[in-house]
Image 1: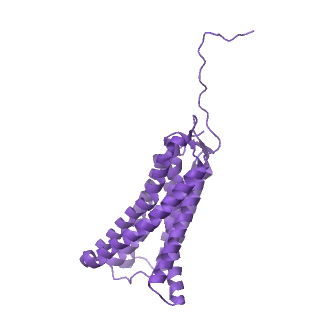
Image 2: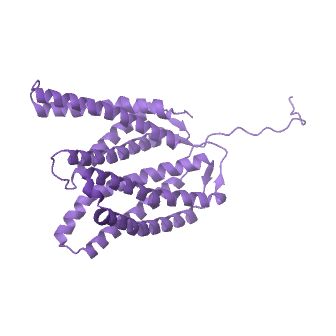
Image 3: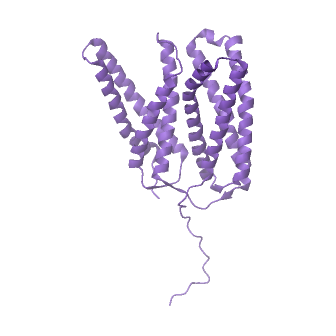
Length: 323
Protein backbone atom coordinates (compact mmCIF):
# COMPACT_ATOMS: atom_id res chain seq x y z
CA UNK A 1 0.00 0.00 0.00
CA UNK A 2 1.46 3.32 -1.04
CA UNK A 3 1.42 6.27 1.34
CA UNK A 4 1.87 9.97 0.75
CA UNK A 5 5.07 11.49 2.09
CA UNK A 6 3.96 14.04 4.73
CA UNK A 7 7.23 16.00 4.38
CA UNK A 8 6.67 16.88 0.72
CA UNK A 9 5.24 20.33 0.08
CA UNK A 10 1.86 20.20 -1.69
CA UNK A 11 2.16 21.00 -5.36
CA UNK A 12 -0.22 23.44 -6.97
CA UNK A 13 -2.42 21.95 -9.62
CA UNK A 14 -1.47 22.89 -13.15
CA UNK A 15 -3.90 25.36 -14.73
CA UNK A 16 -6.45 23.63 -16.88
CA UNK A 17 -8.24 25.18 -19.79
CA UNK A 18 -11.77 26.42 -19.23
CA UNK A 19 -14.27 25.04 -21.70
CA UNK A 20 -16.48 28.12 -21.70
CA UNK A 21 -15.32 31.54 -22.82
CA UNK A 22 -16.30 34.63 -20.75
CA UNK A 23 -19.80 35.97 -21.38
CA UNK A 24 -18.94 39.60 -20.57
CA UNK A 25 -17.65 40.53 -24.08
CA UNK A 26 -20.98 39.53 -25.62
CA UNK A 27 -22.89 41.68 -23.12
CA UNK A 28 -20.57 44.63 -23.77
CA UNK A 29 -21.03 44.20 -27.51
CA UNK A 30 -24.81 44.32 -27.17
CA UNK A 31 -24.56 47.45 -25.03
CA UNK A 32 -22.20 49.13 -27.51
CA UNK A 33 -24.54 48.34 -30.42
CA UNK A 34 -27.54 49.74 -28.54
CA UNK A 35 -25.73 52.98 -27.66
CA UNK A 36 -24.40 53.37 -31.22
CA UNK A 37 -27.89 52.87 -32.66
CA UNK A 38 -29.39 55.41 -30.25
CA UNK A 39 -26.70 57.92 -31.23
CA UNK A 40 -27.30 57.38 -34.96
CA UNK A 41 -31.06 57.82 -34.56
CA UNK A 42 -30.53 60.95 -32.48
CA UNK A 43 -28.25 62.37 -35.15
CA UNK A 44 -30.82 61.75 -37.88
CA UNK A 45 -33.66 63.27 -35.83
CA UNK A 46 -31.62 66.37 -35.02
CA UNK A 47 -30.60 66.75 -38.66
CA UNK A 48 -34.25 66.62 -39.70
CA UNK A 49 -35.15 69.08 -36.91
CA UNK A 50 -32.51 71.68 -37.82
CA UNK A 51 -32.86 71.22 -41.59
CA UNK A 52 -36.55 70.56 -42.26
CA UNK A 53 -37.25 68.66 -45.47
CA UNK A 54 -40.09 66.80 -47.07
CA UNK A 55 -40.77 63.36 -45.66
CA UNK A 56 -40.04 61.69 -49.01
CA UNK A 57 -36.63 63.42 -49.28
CA UNK A 58 -35.82 62.57 -45.66
CA UNK A 59 -36.70 58.91 -46.24
CA UNK A 60 -34.50 58.88 -49.36
CA UNK A 61 -31.57 60.31 -47.40
CA UNK A 62 -32.23 57.84 -44.60
CA UNK A 63 -32.29 54.87 -46.97
CA UNK A 64 -28.93 55.89 -48.41
CA UNK A 65 -27.54 56.26 -44.88
CA UNK A 66 -28.47 52.69 -43.92
CA UNK A 67 -25.35 51.35 -45.61
CA UNK A 68 -23.09 53.62 -43.56
CA UNK A 69 -25.03 52.65 -40.45
CA UNK A 70 -24.41 48.98 -41.17
CA UNK A 71 -20.69 49.56 -41.69
CA UNK A 72 -20.42 51.58 -38.47
CA UNK A 73 -22.39 49.08 -36.37
CA UNK A 74 -20.33 46.18 -37.72
CA UNK A 75 -17.10 47.97 -36.81
CA UNK A 76 -18.38 48.79 -33.32
CA UNK A 77 -19.49 45.19 -32.69
CA UNK A 78 -16.27 43.60 -33.95
CA UNK A 79 -14.02 45.98 -32.03
CA UNK A 80 -15.95 45.73 -28.75
CA UNK A 81 -16.11 41.94 -28.78
CA UNK A 82 -12.46 41.39 -29.72
CA UNK A 83 -11.06 44.13 -27.48
CA UNK A 84 -13.03 42.86 -24.46
CA UNK A 85 -11.78 39.31 -24.93
CA UNK A 86 -8.21 40.53 -25.41
CA UNK A 87 -8.34 42.73 -22.29
CA UNK A 88 -9.73 39.95 -20.10
CA UNK A 89 -7.14 37.51 -21.42
CA UNK A 90 -4.22 39.90 -20.97
CA UNK A 91 -4.98 40.57 -17.29
CA UNK A 92 -6.20 37.02 -16.54
CA UNK A 93 -9.70 38.19 -15.63
CA UNK A 94 -12.86 36.14 -15.77
CA UNK A 95 -15.77 38.38 -14.80
CA UNK A 96 -16.67 41.87 -13.58
CA UNK A 97 -19.63 43.09 -11.62
CA UNK A 98 -21.49 42.94 -14.89
CA UNK A 99 -24.44 45.14 -14.01
CA UNK A 100 -22.24 47.99 -12.73
CA UNK A 101 -19.89 47.74 -15.71
CA UNK A 102 -22.64 47.68 -18.33
CA UNK A 103 -24.52 50.63 -16.82
CA UNK A 104 -21.35 52.68 -16.38
CA UNK A 105 -20.13 51.88 -19.86
CA UNK A 106 -23.49 52.59 -21.47
CA UNK A 107 -23.95 55.97 -19.79
CA UNK A 108 -20.35 57.06 -20.35
CA UNK A 109 -20.40 55.99 -23.99
CA UNK A 110 -23.70 57.75 -24.69
CA UNK A 111 -22.44 60.99 -23.10
CA UNK A 112 -19.26 60.81 -25.19
CA UNK A 113 -21.33 60.24 -28.34
CA UNK A 114 -23.48 63.32 -27.70
CA UNK A 115 -20.70 65.65 -26.51
CA UNK A 116 -18.11 64.66 -29.09
CA UNK A 117 -20.72 64.79 -31.85
CA UNK A 118 -21.07 68.51 -31.16
CA UNK A 119 -17.30 68.98 -30.91
CA UNK A 120 -16.54 67.22 -34.19
CA UNK A 121 -19.35 69.04 -35.99
CA UNK A 122 -17.60 72.28 -35.07
CA UNK A 123 -14.28 70.86 -36.29
CA UNK A 124 -15.82 69.95 -39.64
CA UNK A 125 -17.45 73.40 -39.88
CA UNK A 126 -14.05 74.97 -39.26
CA UNK A 127 -12.49 72.74 -41.94
CA UNK A 128 -15.11 73.69 -44.52
CA UNK A 129 -15.68 77.36 -43.83
CA UNK A 130 -12.69 78.80 -41.97
CA UNK A 131 -9.50 76.92 -42.73
CA UNK A 132 -10.10 76.55 -46.46
CA UNK A 133 -8.71 73.02 -46.23
CA UNK A 134 -10.99 71.64 -48.93
CA UNK A 135 -9.89 74.38 -51.33
CA UNK A 136 -6.53 72.59 -51.65
CA UNK A 137 -8.16 69.53 -53.15
CA UNK A 138 -10.82 66.93 -52.49
CA UNK A 139 -8.19 64.26 -51.81
CA UNK A 140 -6.77 66.21 -48.87
CA UNK A 141 -10.29 66.85 -47.64
CA UNK A 142 -11.17 63.15 -47.80
CA UNK A 143 -8.03 62.17 -45.90
CA UNK A 144 -8.82 64.82 -43.28
CA UNK A 145 -12.34 63.43 -42.92
CA UNK A 146 -10.92 59.93 -42.45
CA UNK A 147 -8.56 61.20 -39.78
CA UNK A 148 -11.39 62.97 -37.97
CA UNK A 149 -13.50 59.82 -38.16
CA UNK A 150 -10.67 57.74 -36.73
CA UNK A 151 -10.17 60.13 -33.81
CA UNK A 152 -13.93 60.24 -33.24
CA UNK A 153 -14.10 56.44 -33.14
CA UNK A 154 -11.26 56.37 -30.63
CA UNK A 155 -12.89 58.92 -28.34
CA UNK A 156 -16.46 57.60 -28.58
CA UNK A 157 -15.83 53.82 -28.69
CA UNK A 158 -12.30 52.92 -27.60
CA UNK A 159 -11.85 55.34 -24.69
CA UNK A 160 -15.11 54.56 -22.80
CA UNK A 161 -14.61 50.80 -23.12
CA UNK A 162 -10.98 50.82 -22.02
CA UNK A 163 -11.58 53.30 -19.21
CA UNK A 164 -14.52 51.37 -17.73
CA UNK A 165 -12.65 48.07 -17.87
CA UNK A 166 -9.58 49.70 -16.31
CA UNK A 167 -11.34 51.57 -13.50
CA UNK A 168 -13.43 48.57 -12.43
CA UNK A 169 -10.62 46.04 -12.78
CA UNK A 170 -10.00 45.94 -9.02
CA UNK A 171 -13.46 44.45 -8.48
CA UNK A 172 -13.09 41.81 -11.21
CA UNK A 173 -12.51 38.15 -10.46
CA UNK A 174 -9.40 36.50 -11.87
CA UNK A 175 -8.85 33.07 -13.34
CA UNK A 176 -5.94 30.66 -13.16
CA UNK A 177 -6.70 28.97 -16.44
CA UNK A 178 -6.82 29.85 -20.09
CA UNK A 179 -10.15 30.02 -21.89
CA UNK A 180 -10.81 27.64 -24.74
CA UNK A 181 -12.70 28.83 -27.79
CA UNK A 182 -14.37 26.85 -30.51
CA UNK A 183 -13.13 27.07 -34.08
CA UNK A 184 -16.48 28.61 -35.02
CA UNK A 185 -15.99 31.58 -32.66
CA UNK A 186 -12.43 32.32 -33.80
CA UNK A 187 -13.33 31.86 -37.48
CA UNK A 188 -16.34 34.18 -37.14
CA UNK A 189 -14.25 36.89 -35.46
CA UNK A 190 -11.56 36.54 -38.12
CA UNK A 191 -14.14 36.83 -40.90
CA UNK A 192 -15.86 39.88 -39.40
CA UNK A 193 -12.55 41.67 -38.77
CA UNK A 194 -11.59 41.03 -42.39
CA UNK A 195 -14.98 42.29 -43.59
CA UNK A 196 -14.78 45.46 -41.48
CA UNK A 197 -11.27 46.26 -42.74
CA UNK A 198 -12.40 45.59 -46.31
CA UNK A 199 -15.35 47.97 -45.93
CA UNK A 200 -13.25 50.91 -44.75
CA UNK A 201 -10.48 50.31 -47.23
CA UNK A 202 -12.93 49.92 -50.13
CA UNK A 203 -14.78 53.14 -49.30
CA UNK A 204 -11.48 55.03 -49.14
CA UNK A 205 -10.41 53.61 -52.52
CA UNK A 206 -13.77 54.50 -54.09
CA UNK A 207 -13.49 58.09 -52.84
CA UNK A 208 -9.90 58.50 -54.05
CA UNK A 209 -10.68 56.99 -57.45
CA UNK A 210 -13.64 59.35 -57.78
CA UNK A 211 -11.41 62.34 -57.04
CA UNK A 212 -8.62 61.33 -59.42
CA UNK A 213 -10.93 60.45 -62.32
CA UNK A 214 -13.91 62.03 -64.01
CA UNK A 215 -16.39 59.62 -62.43
CA UNK A 216 -19.60 61.19 -61.10
CA UNK A 217 -19.76 62.11 -57.46
CA UNK A 218 -20.91 59.52 -54.94
CA UNK A 219 -24.64 59.22 -54.34
CA UNK A 220 -24.29 57.08 -51.23
CA UNK A 221 -25.49 53.83 -52.80
CA UNK A 222 -22.01 52.42 -53.42
CA UNK A 223 -21.68 51.61 -49.71
CA UNK A 224 -24.46 49.04 -50.14
CA UNK A 225 -22.48 47.31 -52.89
CA UNK A 226 -19.37 47.40 -50.70
CA UNK A 227 -21.35 45.87 -47.84
CA UNK A 228 -22.60 43.05 -50.06
CA UNK A 229 -19.06 42.41 -51.31
CA UNK A 230 -17.70 42.47 -47.76
CA UNK A 231 -20.32 39.99 -46.55
CA UNK A 232 -19.28 37.64 -49.35
CA UNK A 233 -15.66 38.14 -48.29
CA UNK A 234 -16.64 37.39 -44.70
CA UNK A 235 -18.43 34.19 -45.73
CA UNK A 236 -15.44 32.85 -47.65
CA UNK A 237 -12.99 33.89 -44.93
CA UNK A 238 -15.15 32.19 -42.28
CA UNK A 239 -15.35 28.88 -44.12
CA UNK A 240 -11.62 28.92 -44.91
CA UNK A 241 -10.71 29.73 -41.30
CA UNK A 242 -13.12 27.16 -39.88
CA UNK A 243 -11.57 24.47 -42.05
CA UNK A 244 -8.02 25.50 -41.11
CA UNK A 245 -8.44 25.91 -37.33
CA UNK A 246 -8.40 23.06 -34.79
CA UNK A 247 -11.73 22.15 -33.18
CA UNK A 248 -10.75 23.83 -29.89
CA UNK A 249 -8.38 26.81 -29.74
CA UNK A 250 -6.46 27.77 -26.60
CA UNK A 251 -6.76 31.50 -25.91
CA UNK A 252 -8.37 34.28 -27.94
CA UNK A 253 -5.33 36.48 -28.79
CA UNK A 254 -7.16 39.30 -30.50
CA UNK A 255 -3.98 41.09 -31.58
CA UNK A 256 -2.81 38.00 -33.49
CA UNK A 257 -6.25 37.64 -35.02
CA UNK A 258 -6.09 41.23 -36.27
CA UNK A 259 -2.63 40.57 -37.71
CA UNK A 260 -3.94 37.51 -39.55
CA UNK A 261 -6.76 39.59 -41.09
CA UNK A 262 -4.33 42.32 -42.17
CA UNK A 263 -2.01 39.76 -43.81
CA UNK A 264 -4.97 38.18 -45.61
CA UNK A 265 -6.21 41.50 -46.96
CA UNK A 266 -2.74 42.62 -48.04
CA UNK A 267 -2.18 39.42 -50.01
CA UNK A 268 -5.62 39.72 -51.56
CA UNK A 269 -5.28 43.40 -52.44
CA UNK A 270 -1.85 42.96 -54.05
CA UNK A 271 -3.10 40.18 -56.33
CA UNK A 272 -6.29 42.15 -57.05
CA UNK A 273 -4.32 45.25 -58.08
CA UNK A 274 -1.96 43.24 -60.30
CA UNK A 275 -4.81 41.32 -61.91
CA UNK A 276 -6.80 44.51 -62.50
CA UNK A 277 -3.80 46.16 -64.11
CA UNK A 278 -3.29 43.18 -66.40
CA UNK A 279 -6.99 43.14 -67.28
CA UNK A 280 -6.96 46.86 -68.15
CA UNK A 281 -3.90 46.42 -70.38
CA UNK A 282 -5.53 43.51 -72.22
CA UNK A 283 -8.79 45.41 -72.70
CA UNK A 284 -7.04 48.53 -74.00
CA UNK A 285 -4.84 46.56 -76.39
CA UNK A 286 -7.86 44.69 -77.74
CA UNK A 287 -6.25 41.31 -77.11
CA UNK A 288 -9.44 39.90 -75.62
CA UNK A 289 -13.12 40.22 -76.37
CA UNK A 290 -16.16 39.80 -74.22
CA UNK A 291 -15.48 42.35 -71.53
CA UNK A 292 -18.37 41.32 -69.28
CA UNK A 293 -17.29 37.69 -69.33
CA UNK A 294 -13.72 38.64 -68.47
CA UNK A 295 -14.86 40.88 -65.63
CA UNK A 296 -16.99 38.05 -64.24
CA UNK A 297 -14.08 35.61 -64.44
CA UNK A 298 -11.81 38.18 -62.84
CA UNK A 299 -14.20 38.53 -59.89
CA UNK A 300 -14.54 34.77 -59.44
CA UNK A 301 -10.77 34.26 -59.50
CA UNK A 302 -10.26 36.95 -56.86
CA UNK A 303 -12.88 35.43 -54.61
CA UNK A 304 -11.32 32.00 -55.03
CA UNK A 305 -7.91 33.38 -54.03
CA UNK A 306 -9.38 34.58 -50.74
CA UNK A 307 -9.54 30.96 -49.51
CA UNK A 308 -5.78 30.19 -49.57
CA UNK A 309 -4.93 33.74 -48.48
CA UNK A 310 -7.13 33.36 -45.38
CA UNK A 311 -5.38 30.14 -44.46
CA UNK A 312 -1.96 31.71 -45.03
CA UNK A 313 -2.92 34.73 -42.91
CA UNK A 314 -3.98 32.48 -40.04
CA UNK A 315 -0.85 30.35 -40.37
CA UNK A 316 1.54 33.31 -40.43
CA UNK A 317 -0.29 35.75 -38.17
CA UNK A 318 -2.46 33.81 -35.73
CA UNK A 319 -0.74 30.41 -35.28
CA UNK A 320 -3.60 28.71 -33.50
CA UNK A 321 -2.77 26.70 -30.39
CA UNK A 322 -4.89 23.52 -30.12
CA UNK A 323 -6.46 22.96 -26.71
